[in-house]
Length: 156
Image (cartoon, rainbow, N blue to C red; front, side, top):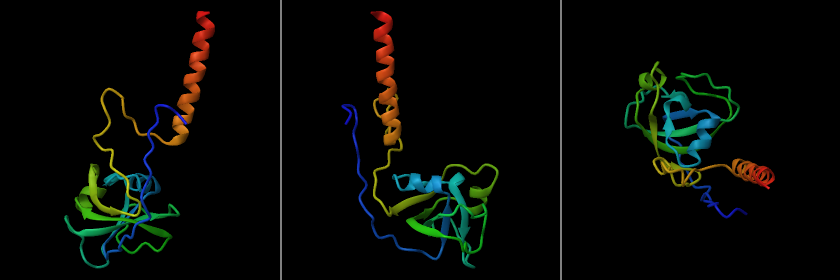
């Protein structure tokens, strides 16, 4: 389609096993996880412990809140519609995740429903590699064509 386009297809769906400790994430966070990212604190809506305190380095399952109705900071079982997307290792405590400085990787993803390489740290400072969605690529190429046409008209 475009001479400067590299596409990478996801492998999946793969089997992901639910765990008793669950982390509920937002739709935006889930999109990133399904593209190979870890779970960052701002994307977490709830950490469900089912009566057993969740600790750093515990194995957790990552669920997406499909309806966007989960209350941030929820401790109990979320009963809304959710879907299992990944499993991983908890890297931060509840206090670190939901505290005023909640940032950074909160769950290191070990297995996801769709396997994609993580591009974290792969973006070149020279701008040679910038991961994009197809609509963005189409828009940029259309704008590039318009700019070239305007430049041609102005210089002829």
